[in-house]
Amino acid sequence: MAMAASPATSSAVSRAASHARLSNAPLRAPRAAAAVSFPSARSVRPAALVADARASRLPVVAAAAPGHQRLMGSLTNTEGLRFGVVVARFNEIVTNLLLQGALEAFERYSVKGENITVVSVPGSFEIPVAAQKLGKSGKYDAILCIGAVIRGDTTHYDAVANSAASGVLSAGLSSGVPCIFGVLTCDDMDQALNRAGGKAGNKGAETAITAIEMASLCRHHLG
Image (cartoon, rainbow, N blue to C red):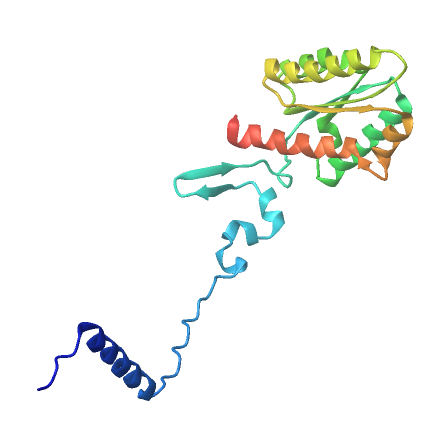
């Protein structure tokens, strides 16, 4: 009489048979992984970023995003723009170089000499009141404020530097005309000279370029 197989024995037999089938099954080649491609930085950069850098200086309204506009001043359309330049005589060896840099920048960007007025004041502390007067006259599109404050042994430096900065800001806000801060605040004469045509460039020229762009922005887009 045959005896019935126990559940444990049946389970072992089933596992053995399954293992045999797997061992005898033909091997399949592994499936190739799907290629994943990533867009290059060039393909996703907005057209505005790959355009020629000079385009940013053109007198156009560039679209920043759908439904938005980007307003910018121009360095190429300077026709008719008028500028006042307030320059401090104190530390004249520095401020003369800054003024020279500013005038050369104006010439380089086709601003006519007849459209530039230079006003001389005793020191940087006196710059803001002259800038405000020029701004409120209605004759100028932007005012350059040029000076040099060099640190000494007293706190006079801090008082003059802070007053000049806040005063120039106030002059621009009260007159509605851009007043560009071009007052050097340096620890010593070497630092000042380096920023007045030395190895650090000429901050007077940079001030003039900023004035041109702001004058253009206000006249053509914000006026």
